[in-house]
Length: 117
Length: 116
Image (cartoon, rainbow over the protein chains, first blue to last red):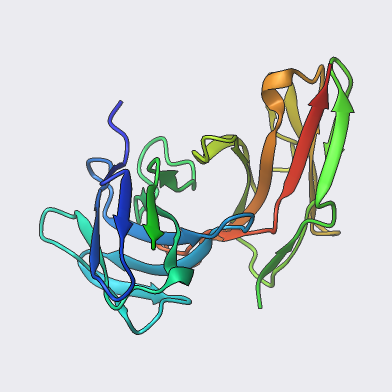
């Protein structure tokens, strides 16, 4: 079965540079979530999109922005990178409605590991 | 505010023994889901088990089972016949379903060590 695809898997950037992470949700999933997980921490919710509109916003810095495109893939843009942005960034997808087989879970990608030097 | 609390930062168990990880949550919602996710050193987020709040029967997946106490807002995970591969960080997570696109709220996690 198709899973959530994230790219790139690893990314190394210098301070003050810009990075873009991409997420391709499971087909027929209309909602995308972004989480940030620092070392030894639990995943922190950043932002989510439903049908290309922002549906919820968490602890996302102003330096970050995101959007969901017409094909439902999403991109997280991070500018003026700081050392503290080094983390694992997860994308997850789900279906808004209770389709057949709906389980309520969010399906996670394998994450994009960002290292800021 | 909806919160998830895991009061055990670390737990350890002997191989083949049983261990229980604790989780409590706070919510005023009536329709929600609860999950346990496993995160091994690879840091991939792997779903272990799920529970729908409207189901009274505790979920079971092979060696993994939960004790869901809705009134007490408690959702513990029991791992039977522990294996070395069970060693990982375990996150309890809660998801309300009032809006369809509600986010997943995680607890702080419990690091489980399995000793041979």
